Image (cartoon, rainbow, N blue to C red):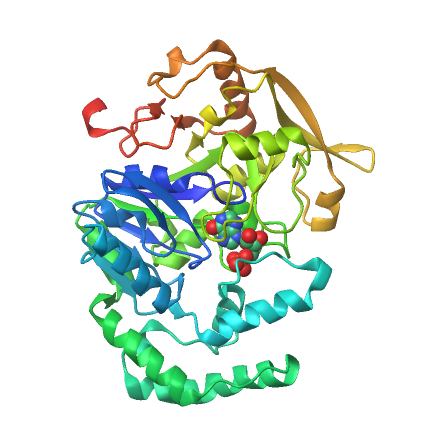
Length: 435
Ligand code: IMP
């Protein structure tokens, strides 16, 4: 039975929430494996509309276990609020498990995130301000606090004695801030530990058991491939790997167990925060796409930068993630546009290049080389069969498929679950009734 990974294939906000919510219907386990509450997934289903940040979309499924994997950094206060809101709206959250190895976002991480951004001045990354970078930095420098620590008051005190002193030193000496009190932080996080204890488990073991039973496991990516610290537009990236390889590490599943890797691409491009985006449209067309697609961040409410589909970045994303198929989302957002463009190469210093450069400053200087396509100028949200799409939409899609170099399995033409076209029969993506 399959283990499938769903990955944001661009700069995040590709509409993974809807796709994962649909796939979760058929999964026995849904696992978040990277990032933290910097992520924002909008899910629209029979319970209503939700903006999830930490809880995996699988929470809405009537049977799946929703898992926050070891690769996630967890802000316990945010998680508890999210659970309370879900409960208020009738969603059962008892099937949640949090990895005992997941790192915890501490108050000083959020403070340091803001100080670091201020210090970057004109070169700010435009982080979400949720403490993600400092929490992953502490993980790497072995100054982290993990979920397993907050459920044991003595262990937490011992851990904090070292790590709070280290972080207080940085905050006071580098940034001139006041130190945090060990007693206050300890008692606050002991409280969180008590509330979250029933959920904290060895989730990698749970996954192993599920796979051994032949159950369907879905690994739910956060952010997007081009925000990966190794392969994204460094330093304008996030701090944990949103790639398929990151899924193995962040959930504790060996690569040999993965059956499918689904890349979720938006039919155009968006990005929030700083960093290069070669196809960005800083004109009326960009503004029009933003309004048509309601392109404002789920987490921060910031307007997203909008542009044409970047085929160079997309093909790179397929290569580093090994997508076995792609979901194209938000095709309907383009319904009214008279013509569309796809970037098929970059021009850098007079040379045409087809690879994605390592340096953000090189990428900043890349000019997109476009192919132009006529728009279809008709609503497509009611269409359920691929061959019923207008000819112009199929031409656009065919070229996307060719450029990204992987077969398209589904096309999303609206926010609701049913507004989906299944192009390829597939165990996970095909609705039960259509199989
Ligand atoms: P951080 O992850 O908060 O440190 O932010 C680093 C960069 O990643 C910034 O450009 C953010 O806007 C971007 N980012 C982080 N999470 C998301 C997301 O879920 N969607 C889109 N961009 C994100």
